[in-house]
Length: 219
Ligand SMILES: [Zn+2]
Image 1 (cartoon, protein in one colour):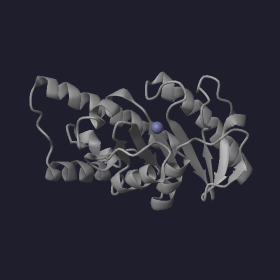
Image 2 (cartoon, rainbow, N blue to C red; image 1 turned 30 degrees about the vertical axis):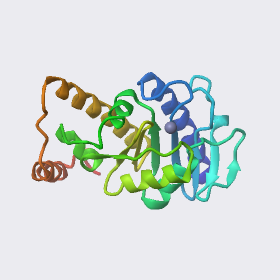
Image 3 (cartoon, rainbow, N blue to C red; image 1 turned 180 degrees about the vertical axis):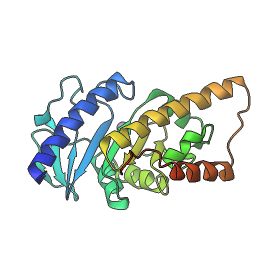
Image 4 (cartoon, helix red, strand yellow; image 1 turned 60 degrees about the horizontal axis):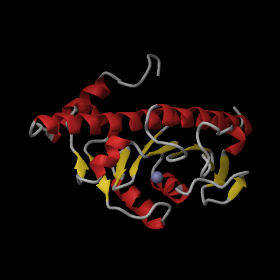
């Protein structure tokens, strides 16, 4: 696929997953934002447009430095955070949500502990970055720091940020993170949850590698 076709595919994917963001309850209205890296460019959802009316023409294309290449609309206010994650990691896509379970947890906990072994898909217990105003360089720094060694981070009184090699992979992590936060809340309603040890998590990660989880045959 040439760069132009790749960008077109990214625009379509962003519109499709933007719709899912609302349908899956990971954000309401125009909140939350998504981006995909295509070579040295980033395609990102625009600011302030509801996902129910978002079209491919509304998707903004910027450089890794944030300069607008094609932008009929204003890029997401969290563009600095997306750019910081691309600069600090090898991510191919970034998903930022305002999902309810994660936001509720962020207001009360310093991290999401390993209540279920699936958390190994996120790199382990998920840190909660201290509150910083939306759209700020400080929030971008806090998110990057919380993402070290992880594929997901929680932003205090705000939401979450997940990354991955592709948009479907990053999005699946956002769904998993919300599910884990819900499981943790349910577990706490029964009493003090048992939390998996690092040795148990390491064992799960090793077995997942051995079984080549997430890969199709031939890959
Ligand atoms: Zn946000």
